[in-house]
Amino acid sequence: MKALSQKRRHPLAAIALLLMGLLVTGGLYAVATTVNQAKAATTSFTANDAEEGGKLFAANCATCHGTGASGSQAGPSLVGVGAAAVDFQVGTGRMPMQMNGPQAQKKPVQFNDEQTHQLSAYVASLGPGPSIPEEGLLDGKGDAAAGGELFRVNCAMCHNAAAAGGALTRGKFAPALADVSGKHIYEAMVTGPQNMPVFSDANVTPEGKRDIITFLKQIEASGSPGGADLGALGPVSEGLFVWIAGLGVIVAFTIWLTSRAS
Image (cartoon, rainbow, N blue to C red; front, side):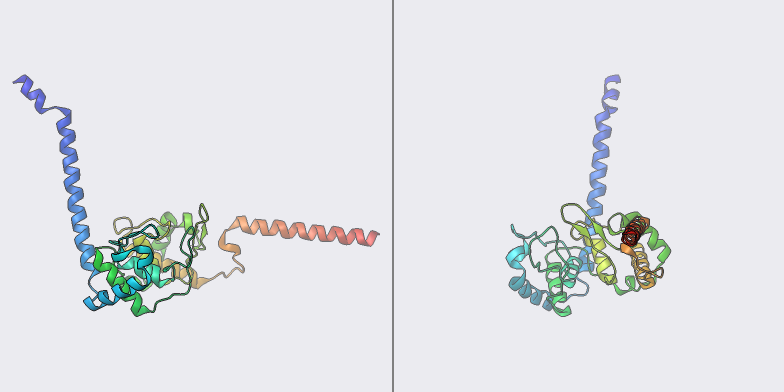
C-alpha cells in the first residue's frame, strides 16, 4: 500500500496533469478565437466581392504572394492575415510595393475603395483573421486621457510620445501618425504591419483602441501652439537648437568685433 501511495504522488503525474490542462485551455481558446474571427471576417462581404477580389489579386498580387495567396520567395502567404491587413496595406498605398526595402513605404494608393474592399474580401475568404473595424470604434469619441496612457505605455517607445514617429534599426522606422485615418490606426494595431507588434483584444481592448485613436486625433487637432515643434523631441532638440543658435550669435559677434578693430 505504501508503494502504491508513493506512485500516485509521483511529481511527474502532477506535471503531466498541468500540461494537459494548459493544452486543453489553449486549444479551446484558439478554437473560440478562430470562430469569432471567421464570423467577423465574412460579415460585410459577398461572394461576388470575393470573386472579383480574386481576379484583382491574380492580376496584381499573385506575382509576389503566389497563386491562391499561398506565398513565394518574393512575398509571404496571406492565408489567415484577415481583411484588416489587406485594407491597411492596400488602403495606405504600401501594397503593391514600389521596390524592395527594409519596409514598405506609404505612397499614393493604386486601387480605389471598391477594389480595396474586393481584395480584402478575397483574402478574408482564404482563412479567418482580423476584420475591418466597425465605425463605432473609429468615431474619435473615446476617453482621450485613457488613450494617452495606453499610447505612452504601448506605442510611444517607437512612435514618440507626440506620435511624431522615430527611427528603428537597420533602416526601419515607426511612421508619424498625423493625418492617418482612425480605421488605418485600428487596423495597424490588430495586424501588426512592418515591425509593429500585434495588439490583440486581449492586449488592448476594442474600447482601448478607440481611446488611443481619440487621443491621437486630439493631439493632431491641437497642433503646436508654442511655435515650431522641432520634431516633437522635447528638451533635447530645443536645447540643441538654442545651443547652436547661441554659438552662431557669439561667432557672428566675434567676427563683427574683429572686423571693426582692423
